[in-house]
Image 1 (tube, one colour):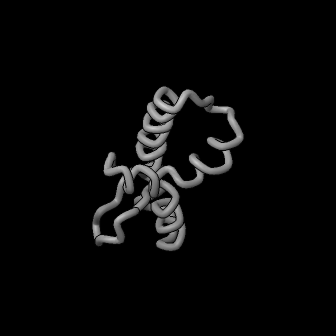
Image 2 (tube, helix red, strand yellow; image 1 turned 90 degrees about the horizontal axis):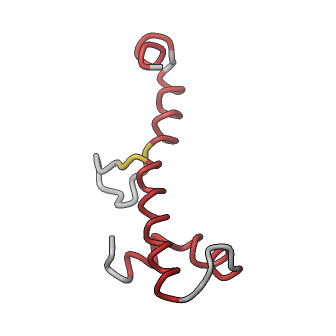
Image 3 (cartoon, one colour; image 1 turned 60 degrees about the horizontal axis):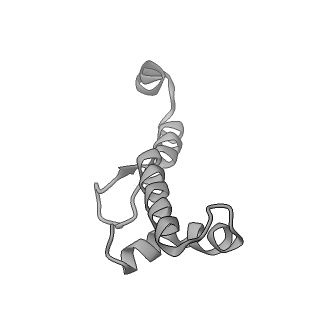
Length: 80
């Protein structure tokens, strides 16, 4: 993959790959975060919320509300 990225992929393909591997939630130049680590962090925080709120991961509220807005909820709660 590294060789393909370095020698074979076009600039457009490189940008596409990077845009799907990294996320910048701050909007600040150079503040990129690996998307898989962000997802693991969000899952960890969701599990903490489930423990505190006596709710289930598969519950409709978590599926439709909490998981879709986890970043904003964590930021409002100052846990990120």
